[in-house]
Image (cartoon, rainbow, N blue to C red; front, top):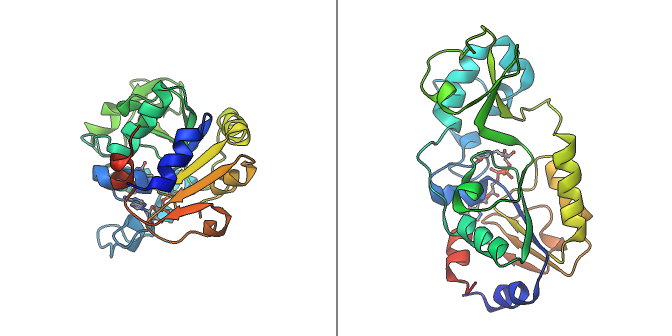
Length: 240
Ligand code: NAD
């Protein structure tokens, strides 16, 4: 158990957890930039870089390839929350965590019991018809083939923020407010390289800035405590 982290959490009352794909690798969902992440794969089936496929212009031009990639690489319907997600839910129940601000699209914090989750990059669990605006669940993409359509004939689009798309303004405002008012910022499992999301960390004015990430990040110097270990293991060892 990390005694310094335990002491920081024990005295904090308005914790914000800012997280990325690294919090879900221990649930079996690959991240993008780790050594075994999706961006390092030698991909033969999809002869385009993931950043290209996951962009708005590619989605519009080649929806068939987009959905093929999206179903194969981005959807993990059987994934279960791990100790990182459950720790956030425990801290929220105890009234010590004001929000989870996450770049993840997998819904695992909510599955663990968190209710205040700000999803900067949206959610893979929801889709919207581009013609009539109807919102449908994951099954509409998971259990169909090719480009999924609404009964009205319109194409479905996952409620995830693609490259070239703007973040939802209300989610951004609420995230910045939560980070600004936090007394402790826990940054977990993110390379802090995807903007604008990564830049929100700089709004933190509170006392304790902790960074838990296996690899080095560009903001390690700003943190009071940097732990380069598996986040799930660290959270599992804490007394919450
Ligand atoms: P990233 O892939 O750029 O970085 C992940 C970081 O997590 C790496 O630096 C790695 O060292 C660290 N990491 C991996 N496993 C860890 C663990 N068990 N414990 C501690 N650290 C660990 O991810 P990012 O910064 O979130 O940015 C990538 C984008 O990928 C985000 O926009 C997100 O929407 C999207 N994404 C989301 C999911 C998901 O929802 N689970 C999965 C893949 C990608």
